[in-house]
Structures are given as structure tokens and as C-alpha cells.
Length: 268
Image (cartoon, rainbow, N blue to C red; front, side, top):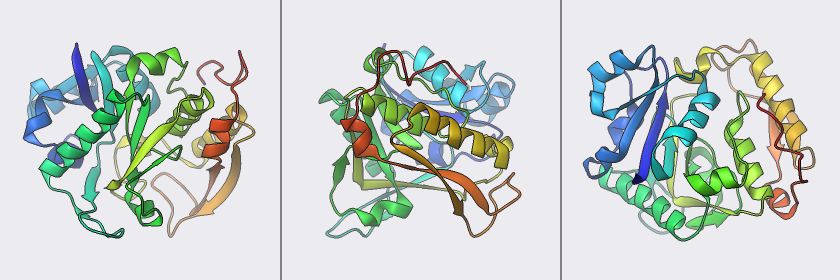
């Protein structure tokens, strides 16, 4: 079993792999593009068979869950497939594009935190990175770029079970189990515009987004509120620029207790 694997779930993006392109050579032996079995030959031809894992599941949450159950590693680092990375190199909150070595340092930092006892760790989003001047925070939002101690993830009863907002659900489940996370603000991830062709945009729309928001609230009723948010233009697959979304009390979740037998439910 490897100490860690960097897994990149990917769908309908054979020709475009920004995240994979950011991976440093020093870490490539532990990097896998996780492709649905129907596309695996195309990915293997384009990017190299040794970097591909064939997954029978389809959809982002089932694919993430398959990774957590089948990737043979103590730690799993998971990145979306359309990412770029940034780093703070001086004082203040200004960020610049991270070089491959610096991306490697970011991965090493996440592994160090997992070695230090954290069960879940993450990377800040670029659009909100400037809001926090600290190099990291504990007990906060993380999505799209994160890592887990696999054994402790399962021990806590966490699972990727919602069609969307699945990473919020996992974070809340682990926080409510009394397990703090740590999120780096020295580094940040960015990506193509929400709704870009491929990935979950292939099947996400107004109705499925709304269903996920209310499903998340049902699972974590005292820390999640459903709201409407408006973007500059509709996401791919959406009819309107206004969508159902959520506000989450991360610290409140950590302070709360997950009732025995409740909150985890069955897969939706």
C-alpha cells in the first residue's frame, strides 16, 4: 500500500487536464486520473496507461466514494480535474501562479498535516483566499481540493453520498464527529468557470442543484440554511443565473454532536 495517492476524478475531458498538467514530476508516480470505464482507453491513450484508474462508478460523488473504498493508500489527496494553483510568496494576501515544485510542496504540506493527526485537510479557493491573512485555518470550508486519512474517514462514518455538495456533506460529517480540519491559505486553487464543459456540468442543472441543497440541509439541519444566489450568468446546464445554494456554519457544526444513528442516513 502506498503512503498517499493523488486522485483526480475526471469525466468527458480527455483532451484537457489542467490539474494533471500542474503535477510535479517528483509526485507523478502517486498521481492517478480516475476515469469512468467507458472512457478509460481514451484517457490511457492520451495521458499514459500508468496514470489511469478505471472506475465503474459514474458521477462525481460515486466516483469519489469509489476512490475512498478502492484506492490503495493510507492517505488520499483529491483534486478536481480543471484546476490551477497559486501561492503566497511574501507578506500579505497577494498570490501568484505556483510552479510545479511549489505544487509539490503543497501536497507535502497536506501529507504532513495528515501525519500530524488531522483526518481531513484542504486547500483554500482562490476567490476567497484574500479574506484570511493567516497561512492556515482550522475548522472551515474546503471543497474541490482536499485530503483524507482513509481509515479514519471510514471509521467516522463519512461518505460521498449526495449528488452535489458532496464534499460539504463529508466535511460536516467529520466536523460533527469531533474531527477538526485544517485548510491552507498559503496555497489556493482556481479553476475554469463553474459550468465549464465536461465534469459534473454534464448533468447538473437547476433541479439537481436545488435537490442537493435541501438534501444537505436535511442531513445537517442546524448548521445548513438554503439560500438563493445569483451569478453573472447561468452555469452550464442551468436555465437561470439565480440558483439554490447553501450557507454553512462550520464552527457550529464542530461544536455540535452528531446524534447516534442519525445524520448519516443511506446514500441518496
